[in-house]
Image (cartoon, rainbow, N blue to C red):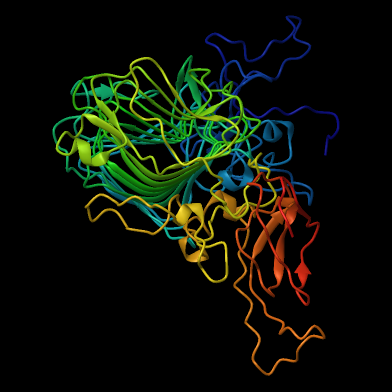
Length: 622
């Protein structure tokens, strides 16, 4: 009844700061007496640095569940304006400043979606299952003997910083297990808790799995993780399974030359199953393997700041079906190291891989540890086998393969000549395809032995020379033949190397990560490229006409056949397309193919496409 002639300040309000802070400063003459009591207690906000300012890396102003902000809450006035809540301060569980404020736009606070999930921090000391979305607010360690199961479709969000300068990450320690098995319809996703979008990188840590398999030196530690080592003698050990797992926007910088990789497999044994994994927009390397013997199948790495696939410290495993897009700001498609002649020598066996560069790319990326422009870098005495590869869009300032710091390993293109000497040889098939204006090889002194590849355009169906995250459409599949009679095979289906005699490998009749039809496009449905609409949808072939169809005035039956033509494509077909309908993709790009080729289009054919042109160059005929 005395309003507005009073000032009430609740004694349950929380005032907290540095030790000895003055809660109330009142005039000595007593003219403002009456305010003298408040709670001096830590409100336990999730993440709030004592130096919070506009340049703070990350914060979350919501109180933790054990915060005193949830006790002794004052009742609000009886008025339709006020909302009765069970917390003190501006926030409870709902972070209403997400998604639309300055802090959200600059990735300083969690997104609205992430803020709705359970927040988790600390060690996992007993087996548990995450059946719904989780947000990591610190580095989470799965302890030895414990299994963490993640249900299909679950998203694991992660803060950028834990408030003490460490990047939150999920770390599976040696002897622990992870069972993260998604599906193409419901993949498991690890990503930033902010409102990031492509091409944002470095907005949280990453996924780290550590095991007891052999590594050079016996044991070692992982970048960004303190007081934890990996390595041992358990070559066949299992650390669990990853399947249909996506890791996006990671690689937070811990310190100078110290960033966390997207997926780190450190000393992981061959009993671990890893298939259908993807790393996109990581600031540092995409997938890094430090020693160990784990095998990988169906690996997608997109637009990372440094190396897409990195092997080191004696990694000896098999990799099949790898797809890498480097983009303008990326670096190497692979960086495969050993330690000169130390044992175990690194021996990756990489088959069926496609590496796509960018003709305007530069090695001066945010996380590059060298300025060498090369699609593949092999160094420090690594051994291995590299067969059925497609390396395309090698720009004029780069090379397809760069090799340096070689050891005593045999470097050869005759696999039969090195039988029995594994791991002390490096075989690089002369049937691998390298395409682009840049040179195929650059070999430093002492690294002779590999010099031949097939220098021909691999004829990916739709791949711009400036392929990047903002490309309108791509289609990395390859046609099996250039003619309807199937007499002229495409380069990807010619001279295919035999696969090693191991049940791990699938013997396919093509080079590269994908074949002729949609069934081989294993990134469909679940990759970032598919989710963002960058991956072109391949229409099934039209139904051929029946014999009762009326003839055109030319006297030639109208036939239909799907032949996907990209925008401003330079005609390169070796045989005629007799009486078929020609389809075109929507977006425009330039493509350089070989000259002196011919395509014939008879009367009655129908051209269908938006913004589509066929340009003849170099003596081609139509």
